[in-house]
Length: 412
Image 1 (cartoon, rainbow, N blue to C red):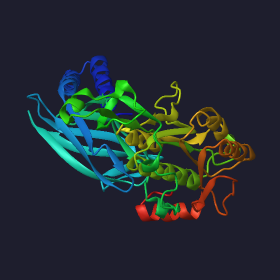
Image 2: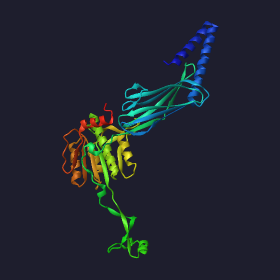
Image 3: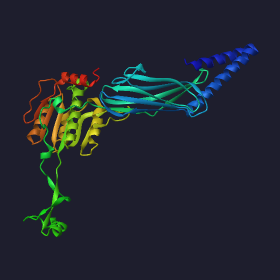
Image 4: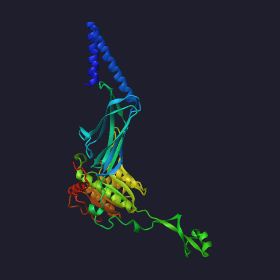
């Protein structure tokens, strides 16, 4: 039972004793205790209505193994001095390690506890250091602020519902370190053939040649050059790279997931996405996995990003991979059959630690239909040999443990 509850019971018992025994000093003592408790409760409640608490993570997005700062600010905008304040912030425990300030709260959670006091119109700021050792989405909060009266007899609680969150991207490494040893394993976008000419994008003018359409004559350039000139159009090319990440590491969904295979798959997908973004591909991501959902009543969003050349596409894909849930309910061949068949000319990169007969048959069918397919096998060696498909075996559990140790990733 809380301390103020005990004091309330003591006040009631003392008051009843004084009334029934008709002992005046006991009655007056009970009334004095009651007034003190009431004044303390009103003091704490008034402070709780006005006190402000804020926290911020810097940066909010980071890579695995990075250090970040968690800044907290407590502000007392009233004339009431608050000598006893306790702030409790819940933060994730696994993969998120605060330096010397957190106490264990419950499994996979820890709490940041700040005990301090504030004078009237005082504001305090504190900065704590944390290291993230695993990809994921880390909410900070909710926050509970407990404010005591000046005598420390009673308190009032304020629950701050706003949450700060930290997004940790998966590890990305060069393809050579990943085990994909080739100058250009997915096709060079600089050598993509022109698909068609854009009639609205003029690159310049050139001398007219027999057979050029009359409507393409560049009349201003013709007047300036004194000879017939033709508009030279820019070509449109659309090199695409579609990533298909298989988050199912066991043949049956109810069997769970092999963490090493899953993390190596996500690491490979992030590394290939970064490679494709730097080489100018239009990136797309499809997977049989889902993102973590915030509430029980919400449906988990799909792990899917349609192809785009937007500069923010890489960050979007990395964010999705960071928040991917460790399970998948659908086979990857269903995703391939739906999205890959219509993507002629695109580089299809399939990343999987599990290669079932149905999945291999679908990959072979895509290769026979003329698709450029590359398979990155994240299971334990030896890897598969699929006809017509570039296959790279990345090393499985041992390789992921090496990467995790190198980048300070939590392997618990």
